Length: 473
Image (cartoon, helix red, strand yellow):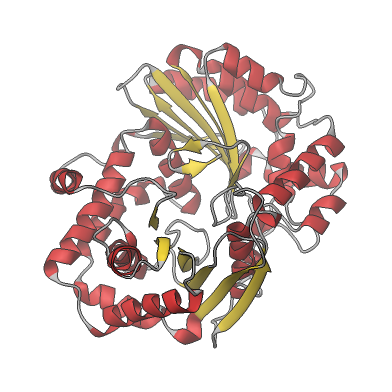
């Protein structure tokens, strides 16, 4: 989990919220797991379906996950997954371009889609009585991909790249940092793709890629909401079971070799202030160490009482905001990244030295029992609060199912609770070391004409701007 505390981001947890969080976390030990009431079925064509009743409000959310992201692309064809996400809204044999959006909106629903390094997700939230509408529409565009206006949509993606990356110094820095940290693994390239590759993509490229990766056998459907689960399961089966599969997706066997020495890179870019990223290779949830790293990120960067915030933002007034963390649910081992934007007149190297001092403190001294418990409470409370949203429930179930088993979601709280001070110290000593790090420094070449916008660092790209469940669409 990545935590960023500073003026551009949501306010940190208050003392009152912390006290309430402790109660929530304590109660979580006895609550039913998210996965307990999920009904599952695998259709004859291999499509996996998970349905969960939630009667808190008369709404439902429908998500289709495809196990394809930028990690599945090839050199020279980067950005193809994200381009297809756009093209999926450009019509089918049955519907005209943008008609999908119009039908959902006419039925009082909201929709969007996102592409990440690991998967692509399409989703609608709608009145429970109209859930059949997105079910039918999603089945149609899985079966009858026939986009119109390819060149125009590709031009939209090219402009999106210019705005979100080329003209955005912080995202440009993140892109360069990741390209240095990953040498052999496809996480080397950005989700939106390299500009030259995107410009060379063709409609035939998109159709061939869709035929392989947008098949039932490569998809997971999640429905959560105020409905009868058996009825919804039947509706989904009726619409999706007749869809035939394309070719099997090829195996992805690229492995990033261990990093054997520090890597450094400098980006000279128009920017208002200097910034840096410091990244370390770490494991995902398949390794118990990942949970200790989750707690470590809380200790360092979650809330105004966290170590980095107190040191860099309050006491030394070196940075505007500071973040730390990794993606626990990354399909392949992710990066644990520290990032910060300097105050005027502060050098990135000076703030970076303070981050390294805080890392060394964790490596040499155990976190106190009180600080450890506070970090756990915050981590657990954030997880529990998130389950008040049917949208968040659907995303959790979908991502964990793609990782191997949706029931893994209920191992999160117990795993966090088991983390000890010794675990935090051990993972700091094991992973946050010089030979395993990549440092990227942003050196401003002049002021930006205006603050550039864009998707948050880390690779996720959604179709439109605006917040949703803590992300950017």
